[in-house]
Length: 410
Image (cartoon, rainbow, N blue to C red):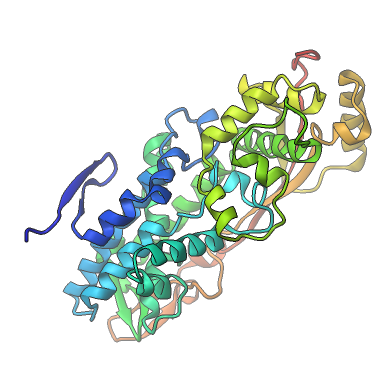
C-alpha cells in the first residue's frame, strides 16, 4: 500500500509534508479545521492589515519546524523512535487546539477561569477517544509526563517550535522585520544532553538574536498601544454583554453557542460544553458585535459601533502609575461628555499595566552545551546582553479614554 503523502505550500516555510495517516486524521478533524477561522494575532490587523493569518497556518508551520528539529536531532544520533517522532509531531499540531475566538485577547473572558492549554488537553483527550488511543503517547509528551523531557521542551519551552514559528510568521504577515529570526540556524544547533534540550555553544548568538527579536515584537506588535486599545475594547464589549445578558432580550441573544457561555455556563467544562466551545470562532464574535451595535444599552452599542468603525480609545503608556488626580479628571470629563454613570464610564476610562519578560529564569531555561561537554544556563555565561537586558522585565502602565474628536452620539 503506498504511503499517504501530501504537500502544503506555506508562504513562510515553503513546502510542508504530511506523510502519516494519523496526521491526516488530525488535520481533517473539525476541531482542527476550526483553527482556520481563528486569527493568530487577534486585533493586530487594526494596525498591520496583513496580519490576518490563522491558528491553522501557525499549527502547520510549527509542525514543519518540528519535523526539521527531529531530523537534526536524529542526525546527531539522538535516539527517537518512530512512535515518539509521530507523537511529538501530533502534539505540536494540537498545541493550540484549545484557543477560542480571537485567541489570547479573549482568554478567560468567554470561558472564565479556564486556560487554553487546559482546553487543548481536554480536546486532545476527546480526539484520543475517537482515535481509539492513538494519541496516548502524544498526550503523555504534551503533559510532560514522558521520560524524555526534551520532547516536551520542543513543544513548550524557551526555544520551542511554537515560538520559532509565530515570531517568523507574525513578522512575515505584519511586515515588521525586527521579528525575523534565524530559526534554521537555531534548529541546526539543537542537541540533547541528559535528556534535556540544549543548544550547541556556537549557536549562542542566534539564540541571543531570537530573544531580542521576541522582545521587539512584543512592544512593536503584540503590545502596540493601538492593538491593545482594540483588544481592550473587545474585552469590554464581551464583559458588558455578559452583565446585561438576558435570554428574553432578542437584541442580545445570538442563537449561537455564545448564548450558553453568557447564560447557563457554570464554569464546568464537560463534554457538552466542550463541544459548544469548539463551535465558536472569530465569526461568532464579529456577528455579535454587528448585532450589538444596535442594542438599546448605551455602553454596549457605543463600544460595538466604535470597534466596527475603528474608532478606538486613546492609549497612553508610561513607566510609572498615572496620578489619581489625572485619572479622576479624565473620568469626570468623559462621564459628562457622554452622559455616563460612574459604573458606565469605567468601560471607557480605565487603567492597568502590562509586563514583558523576554527571558525568565525558571523551569524553561535555555541550556548551552560547550565543546567540553559542560552545560550552562545561558544567562550565567559571559554575555552581558543576556544578563542585563533580555532577562530584565519591562513594566508599562496604561490609561485608555475616548479621543477628543470621538463623536458624542452614534
